[in-house]
Image: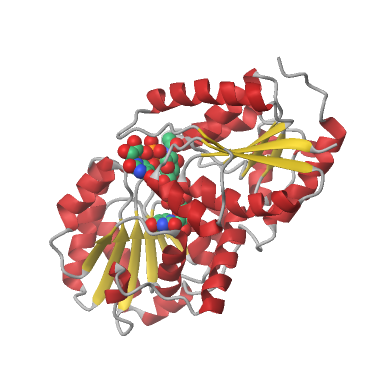
Length: 384
Ligand code: UD1
Ligand code: UDP
């Protein structure tokens, strides 16, 4: 008998990290995979589906411009409930910490459908940062049946929260599966940005600083301070190219384009599809980000990384000495970036491949444990 596995995702990072797992599960004997996109993101999700050749079976189309978290949650809960009632999956797989993840888990819990949580157990220890993601991840952990933390440290966090050891499988993070797959694909095909891409104008004889930033807790003054730092750095280093793919959230667009569009060595570009973005990371001299996924990817590529957050839920990455938590104060960002641009020794010390979040085989480990778990448990709970 084939078990029905429903994977739910809705945002760019979830799709990137679920894509390699979907590829493995599609080939796995005795598993019938159904992919449900909530559509929490529209354009940014389409890019990922295209890059990985993924097709979705259910699309809930929830995104609206400037959506509120409560409005989004209400739509998600209703539409997911109807979908679960129709498909009756044996297990629902969710990823990480977005509103899609938590609400998809909650809707499954209320229907007594088991939940598998990928990228479980990361903790910043601060409910306000990342907000609302720290709470989303913790609440998902409370109701999940099977937990797939990327690291031992994340496993310990789950044990401390009272999760039974037999329901935890440390697997590494599937983002590294996606990253290594894409890097290999780019290398093999000798891929370069097309001549009509804004990235084609980048000069290979100049250093490139790659920036991303979109966190809600940084909206307002946090973003202003980050942008002021970038403006100052661009003036101070006219021979360095600063490239910022700007997230489609209108709050981010307004702040970034408002404060940075006048600077000739800052290239503001639309969100890049995964192949362009991996190419950019690989090409970068250093990376500045408040993103979760980029904190795992850049060190795995050996790129020095400055994290634009006060606290991180990726503590393990700080242990390798290639990543620094610099916060969102203008002076500190300027100082730490300048150090890496001016001091070759300081730069070299942070320039080393470090990948505590995975070896590129997390998806196989998840699939293996998942199919065993389904054999042991499926049918135990009767969905109402
Ligand atoms: C969401 C996640 C965050 C994740 C981020 C990744 C929550 C609460 N937040 O934040 O954890 O780090 O995605 O990018 O789940 N928009 C578009 N097109 C798109 C995507 C977004 O226009 O393809 C605009 C829309 O106006 C939308 C807004 O961005 O309303 C915000 O999107 P939303 O998913 O609510 O929040 P993010 O800030 O993207
Ligand atoms: N990313 C991308 N294009 C971009 C910026 C980021 O493909 O223009 C990828 C990045 O490599 C990582 C993921 O998107 O895998 C991170 O997504 P995001 O920063 O939106 O979310 P977070 O990880 O913070 O939840």
